[in-house]
Image (cartoon, rainbow, N blue to C red; front, side, top):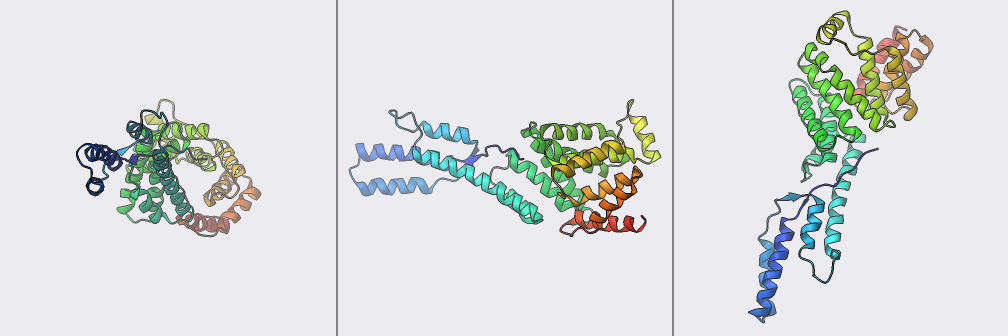
Length: 315
């Protein structure tokens, strides 16, 4: 489900250490016969380096291969092991961050991702966008607005790093809509078409991701359910306004549920509201009951339960 890219790694220490080791070896062989002298110099050379430069894994392997023996065209076992350990570090960071996110430990996931040394890594960026947005939901103003804008910056950076992965488009669309809503109805309406394009692109790139179908369905539902005054704004801004119907919304919500049943409490709520708008009372009550009885594990579940409980009483 998630595209994984290589991360950056710290190599300055190792590159300089190898250069110094070669120089010191030459000194020991040509000018000094003492083994103790050689060991002292080698230890001193290693202790003075500071790991500050971040370079991609491919450059890391290429750089170290320059110091290998001329007789051998293969990388040394040490080089390969170091590269594998770096990839493993990124992989473990991602795996741990995803686990924390799934357990609703958003602050811990955020802190873990922030500690990863190579911040300009796609898989780190989009996850930072996701978890920062989750942190914004229960936060009071103005902290909420600050977190939404921070999350949007991460989504922009992720999209620049990799526009061929569905997660970049999904979180960019979500956060563009969230950020523009902070700036008023007109700005939000202005961004509708861009939001839609990225939602559709996310679905195209990964039709098996239920949340992409959910957000596309939510978009169609929002357009179908627009109040009259917002429709006027949309018509004033666009020569051909973006459109959405309850039928389109229902199709997306049903695809999301079919892809992964009960993956998200809010999908049950939106299914209920869409069925209700389409005058399918029995189906609406079925999903409204599911939404009202959800176990509250996070802010979305809380919002879902509260709204569904109120609506269920009116049915």
